[in-house]
Image (cartoon, rainbow, N blue to C red):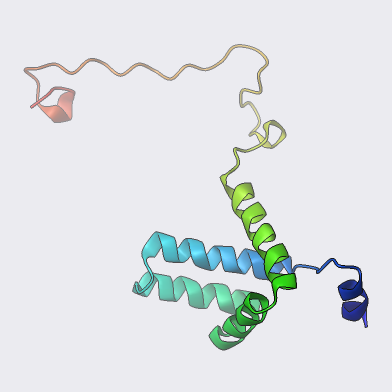
Length: 126
């Protein structure tokens, strides 16, 4: 019943857990490659943790792909999820003692100049 009423309002609800799973699978594929054994293992673990089989995941993805009313909100949710993963951490989420704009800033130490007569592993240039 709730699905019928939500369909009438023009807004289609997006299953955020499915969005998260979809993004996780795409990241694994981009990280390890489409046919890598590592991708297959990550995919199996992610699907199992989310309660999907390969077939049920593909069926749900096909359902969304085939319905523009679902596809557009789904794509927006996927983009929002990706943006949230790429966004820099908020200042409030910074680790204790991290620079939040107040007080002196930590400066990264300068690397010594390479010495031409020293071996590379000791800071020189070959």
